[in-house]
Image (cartoon, rainbow, N blue to C red):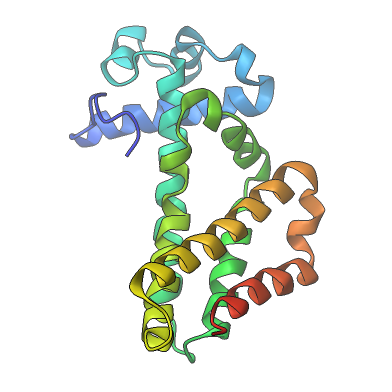
Length: 202
């Protein structure tokens, strides 16, 4: 996904090193902000040599990008769990559970989530950060196809799925930055679910 050119940890000890570096990066970002982040500072906090750090991360931008990748992987895996473990009826209840889980992911570790989202433009990582939204979009598209293929063309269904899921994503991101309290408001969830329901109207 992000920064595929950097070396990936393969042995367990390498993974421990990378985890330590990412934990140190998180600590510095939350404590002192992006301005205080440097590869030397991260290596020092992690207790890792600067040479070992450079095996996996060529600069501080790659450290932040790796945190974004980690965040995205968590979003996608969590949303997949909602779908794969769903026992109730398909349709609105599932969409509500999806959107609610998507919101909760943003509320968990909200300071770090805000910071990572603020770095997306700088790192040109927006496409990667949208992987969770694209997964949700694929679910909506599949349901739209099952229910509306008689009434809508394949292209129209793809456009409708794209519009509704990205509208929801944009509203959640906007609330995250401008009005965090709204994310916990039940009415906010209700309005997002309404957007999905409207997509299924002919």
